[in-house]
Length: 332
Image (cartoon, helix red, strand yellow):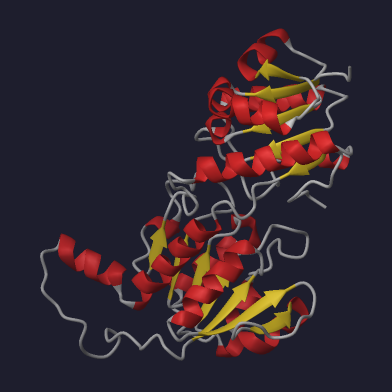
């Protein structure tokens, strides 16, 4: 009989997925290692782990909660760990970066919340386009002031130009929504590709050529050496002053100080920001109070159907792992 697969999971995740996990392993024995007990006893014989949303809790990348920190320390201490599946689309938390660097297979749940994030980004675009921040402020003042006159009249959305950084599941879903509303979408991706689905394809090397015609700069890209601090002062200066920024990717893609300066100086018309260079966003950040900015607490992908979609991805990869097949969404 083959060696059992010692799989680390939280009790909540095991209660939900135990039967499916056993089936996915086929003839290979599966030994559930309860996360909470493994942390207490400092288990060192783990082969695989599933880090579900309940383990992360309200942690941010910069301020992990004690339970998540203990989990990460346990993973890093297991020298024979071979595979970790995480609930998020990104794998840039320090623990996962370290595991990947030492050869552990790290797989993500990229695509599980693509529809949700794309809808949130679209909501941000519509809210800014229709002057909702201004109207919300008027509501708080009980002020009846229609959107008439210079600087108040919204522009028609059809025909406006969107520059979309990233062509993963979120970017592709969002592009379909935007083109359906009549916006002109240019997708910026790492490698050159033919235009598709009514979307112009350009590379990062061509970004400077499209910025002057951009009405909406939408960030849906992963955090990589290429994208870190990509949206800096020179890039923002290349945008027309009618442009808006929408960020549902990673805060570190943006030079936050340069963004604040552009917003305060009136060069940028507005922004919808769900992610920040440091999270939680500091209480004294000017972004909280700028009238043309919508701030949300890194919740663009939160939805009650995500847990099921993430679990299905994990079970599929568990089947592949036990069958010796290539894993999906493996960090490269």
